[in-house]
Length: 422
Image 1 (cartoon, rainbow, N blue to C red):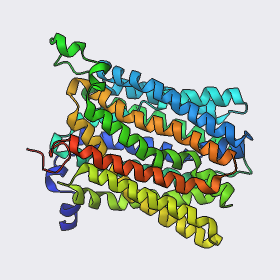
Image 2 (tube, rainbow, N blue to C red; image 1 turned 30 degrees about the vertical axis):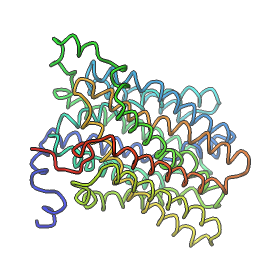
Image 3 (spheres, helix red, strand yellow; image 1 turned 90 degrees about the vertical axis):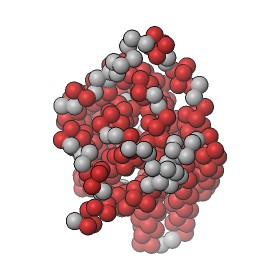
Image 4 (tube, rainbow, N blue to C red; image 1 turned 120 degrees about the vertical axis):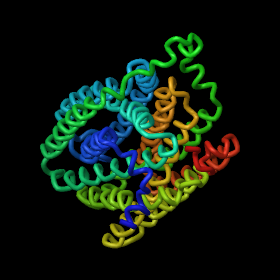
């Protein structure tokens, strides 16, 4: 009991009511689906369907652009109709797109399916963050987002293990099964999300205030603090998640000459580290500067890319060990980033614009997923893949510097340096 009190304080446990439990269950199931196919986008198109690696990486960038273009629309619709209707529509249409993707034998099919997945599946970040911010008091948001992130990775970990046991490059139909399973899990997550509809409607309190009704994206973009958070997050994510998704699996299979099955095992070390360390890290972050925590994320990601670069010069067995160690280090950075960035944006967001603020933070994921594949395509297309890891690592360090510079624009409370008043 003492260990539980240490990891999950009693005041936070008291906020985990049945409604919040259902929200967390939605998170877990939807992320099992994500874990099934995480980082297999390029491998699927190039190694299974036979498209060139340039087509695969550039399609990934195009899909990211489509998701990016749709993101402001999802933010607006979330504020207008509420997070639950938007998330439900996103899950069901995204599942349909995954079915098409599972049978993508031509470039046109891959293009249409990829764009549909990007547009409809990319709506999840803003509505989920908006709903979670409604379900917990302000003083518990950072911990709630951290706990949610732990469940995200627990789900991804389970999905990754299932994926590793199913996929086989010599049997393309195994990938079809994988994507169809992902679609089924998305439908299940959508049904669970629908049970939260009583808490996921539009904000009504400002409907009689003409000034607030008139506020929209122009007001959001005029918030210089938000703009700086978005820019710093963008650079950091290009040096982390974006590049990891764009080229990591391709680098492991084609540059390090390792089996595709190894990828699922490596990612299991990532997700299991997050699950085991997240609560401990959350306790260490309470009352500390959020911007410094996010800067520390960039440092850990730099070390991850250094280890990947060193792996080129190691024997196969040692290479796998170094990749697993690198994933652990990457994961420790993740445990600091998502809780702090989400809590920070929701701290400065007005309630009636919360969907747009969360969508703005979500834009950084879309932009990084668009820019990172383009960078990877240049390196791999010109046979410079060996230089790719260390170059991305330097971008992660640049993101750290921008996070530290962001601190002076925030109050102590916004930066998390003082406990929120209860």
